[in-house]
Image 1 (cartoon, rainbow, N blue to C red):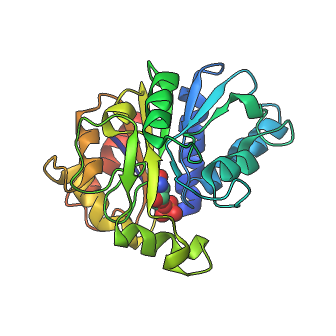
Image 2: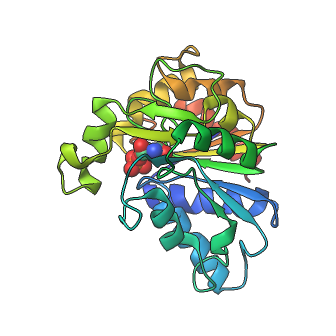
Length: 255
Ligand code: GLP
């Protein structure tokens, strides 16, 4: 794992944008995450696109997950969130028909999961990831299979509480089910770029970086991936035992 620990979220976001623009092969498939964490990164990509330094024109983008049963025009439907952030010449150049999201409105969600798994094969070039406070990536909640493929997931109470802020702070409005890339699907990406900011993520990041690999902290599976870059701020790195060592390594490679 390559671990960058930035003083602030803004500086971490700038590092993540640099890593993505250096390492994502334009024209290939980019795995895109939702949640609030990558929003600053998407803003940087839009700026770089406006400056003519980066484009997703000619690339495709694949979402990690989608709520099941959310209204087609709901602003928190992940397809809509990602389209708002990325689609169009005035955004990153990504075309709407090149944005793939699991079909949370399908009559047969299990079939939609299988279809998505097929669409994403053999895996994206670079997958952007955030992480839930309970260590979930995508919507792979604690206790799920470490070898899962795209599937129907049930959100934990913790995740629905965390995400209630996007639904008028009303947990009853947060969907209960989702379609999510599985952990094995995510592990199929050539490169992974995980961002985590804030104290609320500190325990999850301690587990992901220094804990034992366990279905109880799904993000710990990343320890088995050969090409992971993790960008943290000081708050999210607050529980790491070897933070100074990781900083020294990062500095020695990024002089
Ligand atoms: C949601 C998404 C995850 C995301 C997580 C963290 O549950 N399904 O992909 O990583 O939220 O969200 P945030 O970045 O807002 O903390």
